Length: 613
Image 1 (tube, rainbow, N blue to C red):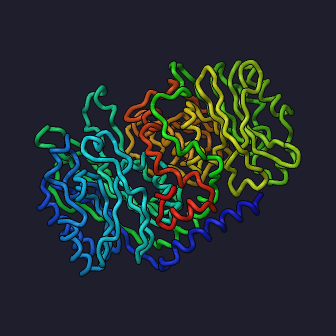
Image 2: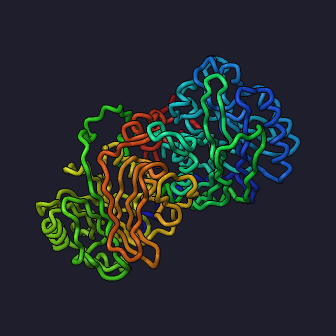
Image 3: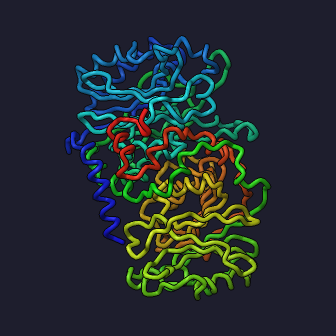
């Protein structure tokens, strides 16, 4: 299968080649800027913003990203309250900024509370500007409850703009709750995602009953780079914003950051406590990047996609009333088994009664086997591995998931099986997105969700979770728990600043990133049994809200497992799976489910509509 993966990568590179051809292969200094507007002070904020652009340019920056709603402030309670502080595009803000950019050569993007000149509607907008004028704008799609008080849903889709410095997409704050928008940018050939935010937290001391809304969008931006192979420049603000009419306050924690196409952090602003700060420029966080360096990793990530599996599921609108969803709450004990590298420890496993235990991948085989060795040990369904898995589950009256190489005629699949307390195989899943390292595995063609007394259990492999579409398929099927056996620890860990987490066990530096992201993006529990290599492990339990309430638990070096008891379905804090599904604006998602060579996708990648409008 390696040659098919190579063809897919080459095809993705070819499709992106014409999009990236205008981008010179040179480096540029980019910056995420902490800029604080005064609430409801449009003219003064525009002057401060122009001064800030001058200063950023003096520091040798070629492209700067400024926060969301940077000339109005953000905390407004109704449309009439924000109306005096809206600006058009072009308008007063662009009139003040463009001479600065023409003189200095700076490119910049900035968030503006925009009034549409024709309809009068208000949009949460980001505009991209350069020395030669207005390049383009984006209107926010992912509207949170605060946005919905004053802003209309975005109507621009996710455009990608050709510039002399690279291909740039714009996103705004809560957009990163939804994996789809960054993915659309990557599919359109983006090299840089400029993300504009006012990422807030509940002020310290807030009573627990009133702090369910505590979250931090800036704690979510790593996935945009890691899953899509693009640079991300994420700008947010610090300080405390007060609405003088209502007395409402928002606490902004800083933490602006820049990420590489491999998902690694390149630069970050400090994460700060709440503090009243004067309006204006409060920090420039910069690094050198070469935008063209995104082209190869982006192509590799996109080559893993299988659009034929996503249609029509990922383009459907789902209401919160979903017959698939688990209705009754129940307790569930989750267990991730940890084995050292080397022989299988399956015969030593002791899964707790009535719990779900997930074993490491290729559970009956030693680790480190070459592809041909794995294929030589493949077996048919109902063979020795499945019988052993079922016997283990029956002996302990438990649910146990593991994986094995399954032979079906000439083909070999990487198959995950779930056994139940009665000693039967309840479900099977053939890995649908085996990566390039799985040259021995034929891709499967459907996901698997099993209804059990613990909840709806989905089956996958941890390796596949680098492709966010897979996790999304499980979310729309209202999976409560995803059992995803893992192998060796991933080199990509969660690199998000631990100060952005309010849980006791922040995952920074020790948790594998892709299972962590899949659990959060899809609002489900995810359990990966895995191998230990030194102090690193792939054995972990990942919760749906790791920033606020659900710890990310990895197995200790000497432990045989890590376990956690939770409630199914997840209770939710600022969002839950039902709200996540209902909040998606699926009208923009048609390109996600189109074959790579479809006329619709080709037209859309060139800037048209898919479907045509």
